[in-house]
Image 1 (cartoon, rainbow, N blue to C red):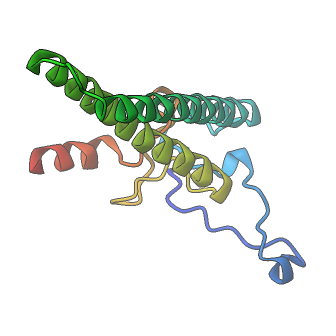
Image 2: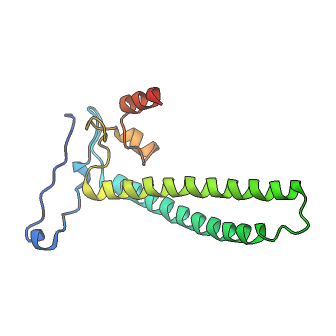
Image 3: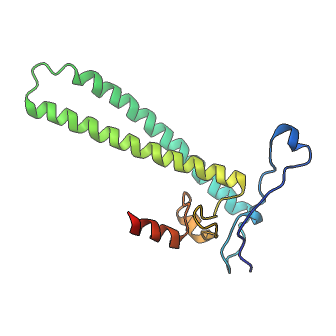
Length: 157
């Protein structure tokens, strides 16, 4: 099977006026040489998994924001706290802030993957333009780099 490198899509007839594109056909998504094309069921499964992940992350972010609001409110009180109490509150607040930041980044990546599915660019490496690999996308659906480009990126860090 030939490697697909690009998935340039044309607007649907009449879409020029509305600015909408036809949704990609599952077979239009990039795969590596030797891999089977994406089936409609596989694309639906990827989309559903990413959507569920985005919903879960939004809930976690909302809960964390509420917890942080409470921690910030309580940290101003501090009367009668010894240094250990103050340090513990600060550590808890910092931990919650770090978790929230991580969840926001994961949400961004998840929403970006959903947009890539809709645009028909899901599975294409954002660095070299080659297919990432269907198997890799199924294991790590937020991947934006092929294995080679990801390894190069990690060596630079």
